[in-house]
Length: 506
Image 1 (cartoon, rainbow, N blue to C red):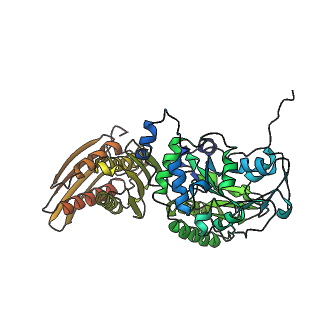
Image 2: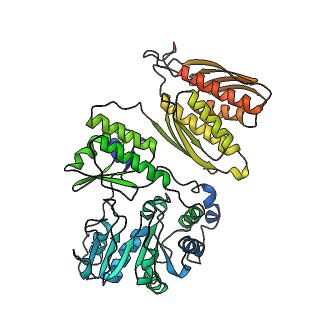
Image 3: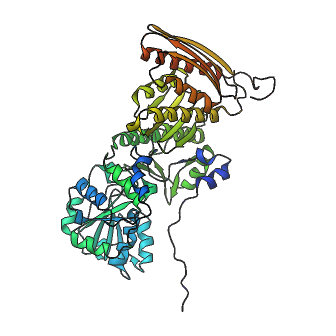
């Protein structure tokens, strides 16, 4: 018997841990601009979405995830018989190469396209050819990865597969070609923000779907992943913000002498001779980008992350200076999932969104009046009340602040502020003591303000005294949050290079 040998195969980029160790950073500080995924998971990706699936995780799904297939069919205006599920669209790329081109020929449009097509051809024993009109199987990457262009779909004699992984960002699709026998591939990894769930799907005629499904392993998509995908379908992604950010980032890159190709995706591709050098120069800043032969590709994330990329580029290409370090933190519990990006001494750029509007506003006031840059977003089990969400948003903020303060060397340590709000008045005193103490008197308390400050003091390891009173509960709470923010701004102000304690540590 001949022993099989390994084939040339897709190689994953290095992990955050490996890259961080190379440049002396925390793994959590590495920002991935090389995966073409959103900066945060969708609001639907929360523990509650998995509750039913977890309760039945000991069982197989006997319907081939029919609710998800029906949801996908309705999303695209098709029949459920026209949908097949797979472990990402890569499963279909490999499977289709074996079905339609085993020992035959494969072409891609454009000729330079997603590398997985070539690896699938290798696994199928197929030969890559340049002319799509002479190939048994033709992959059209639309929009194209890695260049971002939107190619035309040719008429070919072989089986046509149109990979629309990035179609949401282009605002166009080729679903009409299904009537001509084409197979459309889609994924939940990009616009839906579920790359880790590994859910993709194929859209085709019922006859073609039968051919595909008959050659798949049973249930290659887990019940947990299917539950996340079904929850995401209930609130389809709005990519308009990311598209606008793509155009802003493109303009900023042009100003640095890096001219990207026009993009219909969530990434930008810049032709250049030595992209590997730029990738390596950016790593010490915690910025992970990707090099290709003849070009550099960078994912579009959001304004906070993209500004870190731009700061690093200015420092390396134009001799600029970078902003102070941004702390990145994620808190995930059975009730909530929250992502925090915090720069304690910033410019008051604040965005807080958890779905709990009142306390989102309160924390925004604290951070803004504290002169911080804060982006905190996520979701909690608001259907059970506001307790878990408010508590965890303040704990997540406190954990990030504690990490940002470090050993608290060179900080003033103490801060105090008084803030009036119409008939209400608040007084806050802060000590970056390293000891979690909270003495809070808020009258009237709108419900969670006292507990919110207690949660902050516990996780930030600060001593916090707050008194606030008035007639209107909203005014009282708002004055208190503003006062705490202003007191924190005084406490974290630079003051020499000492730890402000005769003990030498806090």
